[in-house]
Image 1: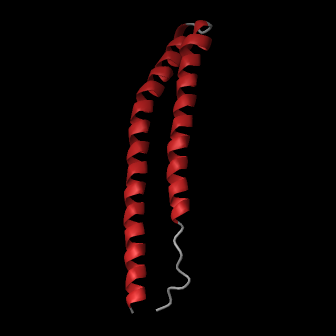
Image 2: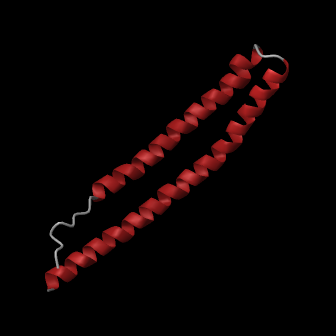
Image 3: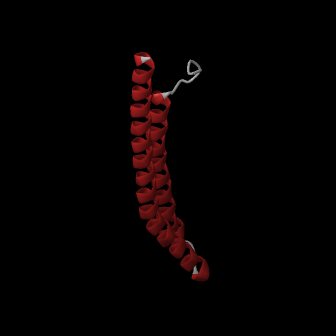
Length: 100
């Protein structure tokens, strides 16, 4: 069996998981800044339908932010579980290879 070319990069999986969480926080910050700008900054200068549209969009960002955080948290958790399973399989496979 040719397994000598098989190499799992556990550090990369951990790095991707950390990046996913970090980018989620960055995206959340940008969404909050945009919503704040639409309602407090630019919102004072807008009138009529444009002001209402900006307010509606800010509200949409606020509601989407909670859903996005939950989705990304679930994705990161699933990635961590998958990584644990891969790590266990890698360890078990290595143990079996050494046994033969």
